[in-house]
Amino acid sequence: MAALQLPNDPMTDPSAEELIALRPWLKHDAMNGLLLDGVPLAGIADEVGTPTWVYSAETMRSRYKALAGAMADAGLAVHIHYAVKANDSRAVLSLFATQGAGADVVSGGELLKARRASFPASNIVYSGVGKSPAELSLALREDIGQINVESAEELDMLSALATAQNRTARVALRVNPDVDAGTNDKITTGRATDKFGIPYSDAIALYAVAASLPGIQPIGLATHIGSQILDIAPYRNAFARIAQLVHALREKGHRIETVDCGGGLGIPYRNDPSPSPAALAAAMKQTFHGLDVRLAIEPGRWLVGPAGLLLASVVLVKRTALDPFIVLDAAMNDLVRPAMYDAWHGIVPIAAKDAVAPARLFSVVGPVCESGDTFARSRSLPTLAAGARVAILDAGAYGAVMSSTYNARPLAAEVWVDQCRWSTIRDRQSIEEQWARERLPT
Ligand SMILES: *Cc1c(COP(=O)(O)O)cnc(C)c1O
Image (tube, rainbow, N blue to C red; front, side):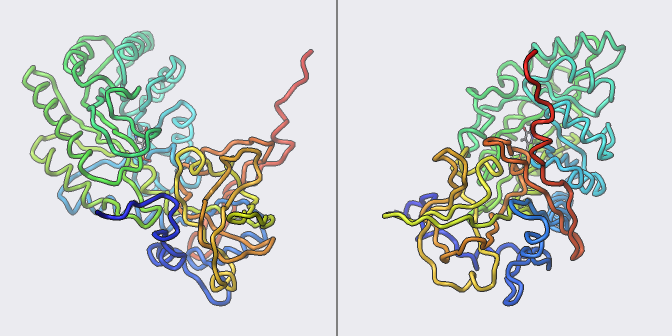
C-alpha cells in the first residue's frame, strides 16, 4: 500500500530546492538570496516593508499563453474568461484584458472592476447564486455577454428586470451536474447538496421556461464543479453530463450556442501531481468535439496562483518543549488559506545564508489571536533570526482578495515585478484609512 500523504508530513514535504526547481520564475542567488524574475525579494522587503504580496507579471502572461496554446493545440476555439475573484488587482485585470481574455465575475463590484480594467462588456460572464436586483440591473445596463443563471427564482427576477429596462439578457443555465470534484469540502460546488447551479433533473424544464420568458435569450449551458481540482476524471464526468443535456435540449428544438466549462484547474502547491491544461483540453475535446458549441472556460487559480508570493519577516522564534514557533509578521488575516482549507504552502527563506543553514522542524505562525493562525506545522526550515525574511509561495490566487483587517491589521501592500523592474500596485493600508468610515453613535 502506498504511504499515506499527510498534509504536514516533513518526510514527504518538498525541500526549498525542489520547490524552487519547479517554479522557474524563482531563483536562489548566492549573493542576493531569493529572486523573483531576477529581482531580489530582499530589496522589495527593504523598501516596501512586510507583509507584502509580490506578483510575477511574466508568469501570469506565460501561463495565460500556455493555457490558450493548449486549447488551440487540441484544435479547440475556447474563450478564456479569467475568474476575477482569484486576484482582482487592477494591474492583474489589465494584464489579462490586454491578453484578450474575458472576465468571469461573481458580484457587481467585480463587474465594475472588470469594466474599469477595460474588459469589453461582451466578454464578461456573471455567475453566482445570489445576484441582487441591483447587480442584475447593472449587468443589464452594461449589456454583458452572458449571465449564468443559477435558479428558477433568479430567472424570474432577471426576466422582470430585463423587461422593465427594455433589454434582453443572454442567459446560460448553470447546471449542477452532481459530481464530486474530490477537492476540499469548502470549495467543491458540483454536488447535488451544494448551493450552486440548477439541479440536473430540472435543467430541461427550466430551459423551456427561459425560452418562453420575456427579456431572456437562452444561449446555452454552464457548469463549474469546484476549485483546486487535481484529477481530470470529475471534469470528464461533468462534461459528459452537460453534453447529454445539449443533445436532449436540441432534440426538443432548443438552440444551444455555448457551453461554459467553468474553472477549477488545480496547481501543485506541494509539488503534487496536477493536471495540465493539455489534459483539460483533451477532456473537453473528447466530449464536445463535433457538438458545434462555442466553448468557454473560467480559470482563476491556475493563471495567477503560482505567480504570487507573500513576503513576510520573522518577528521572533519562540522556543517550546515541542517544535519551536517561527512567528511571522504575516498572519491569517493576510493569507487565510491554511486556516480556512488546511492548505499547504511552500515557505522558503529569502537570505542566501538562510538557504544553506541546517534545518529542523518548526511551526510557522502569525501574530493574530487565534490558534488557527498557523501557516505550517512540522515544517523543516533553517533556524531563522528575528528580521529574517521568508516567501510563502503560490499565494497569487485567493490571497490578497481574501484578506481582512482582523486584529486591526492593515491590508498588506502589493508589488508587481515585470521585465526585471518592480512597482507597487497597491499601497499598504494605513490605520487611519481603516477607521476613516467609523462614527460614534449620535
Ligand atoms: C471561483 C470560480 C471560478 C474559478 O475557479 P478557480 O478554481 O480559481 O479556477 C470559475 N467559475 C466560477 C463560477 C467560480 O465561482
